[in-house]
Amino acid sequence: MVQNEAMIQIKNEAMTDIEQAQDEKALQDVKVKYLGKKGQVTGLMKQMKDLPKEDRPAYGQSVNEVRQAIEGAITERQTILAEAQLNQQLAEESIDVTLPGRTVATGAQHPLTRTVEEIEDLFLGLGYEIVTGYEVEQDYYNFEALNLPKSHPARDMQDSFYITEEVLLRTHTSPVQARTMEQRNGQGPVKIICPGKVYRRDSDDATHSHQFTQIEGLVVDENIKMSDLKGTLELLAKSLFGADREIRLRPSYFPFTEPSVEVDVSCFKCKGKGCNVCKHTGWIEILGAGMVHPNVLEMAGFDSKKYSGFAFGMGPDRIAMLKYGIEDIRHFYTNDIRFLNQFKAVEDRGEQHVNI
Image (cartoon, rainbow, N blue to C red; front, side):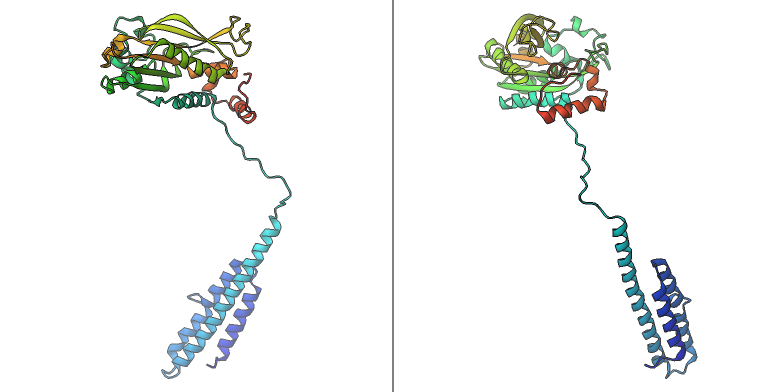
């Protein structure tokens, strides 16, 4: 189609403006100027109503050719400008690939988590189940089912966080043992460890906290003897503190076991010669244990003449303090990054001890 002089002039001016546009905004202004609702090409189309009917098709086609030419030129210019912008950005933001990369900071396990998982892995390998329970517990399972009657000194409200007269924050993980035995309906074997948080109204000093972690173990079956308990605890001590460690059992008293013992491990620092860690005795107390009291078995539905068992309880907080030379239990809970970073270094070196 033949374009009239006005069309040719608008087309030429548009091409010049497009060529001179140096950025996206300028190009957009050109597009609005010629192709917008009030643009010059749109104005040409509005003139079509004044033409005779027979001339309108040819005129409209000519205007569309102008529009298409301008649109094509704008698209081509957009591509050129985008490429130029990218090249400029690459030049200004070039990366020196010879520079060393940024070090990505990595974390490490909390010493308590490491200790708990180490103990769990040991007992899982021995065929134990890991069982957890309620931190808010009934008085019955926390005390009575463990041979602790209402009048027992350990039930003094100064030692426990009571919510009501019959509900409290558990003072040990032993209620998990009581509940598990009850669920077994008097049928053995039972072979579990029970890790978790416990709560007591102790003073918040360097060695005590109102909240701490405990792991208890329980085995109930036919013909379980004290020698089975001793062998298990020897394996535990060697796994935690070294293959050359020895243990000794001292008579003690716990309401839920009979007989009861305190368990000491030979000092891993001085090899039993005496030092500040073992208070110059050569031994370090690590846990309490004993044979399950017949009353506890009977209350859980087990025949104490057929079944026997042993139980033990330890504090991973104390074990971690001994393993890593930590003197203040409060370090575990303050989230001081300086304290935690030391265990990243220990983990990287594969060591077992730091001086805090």
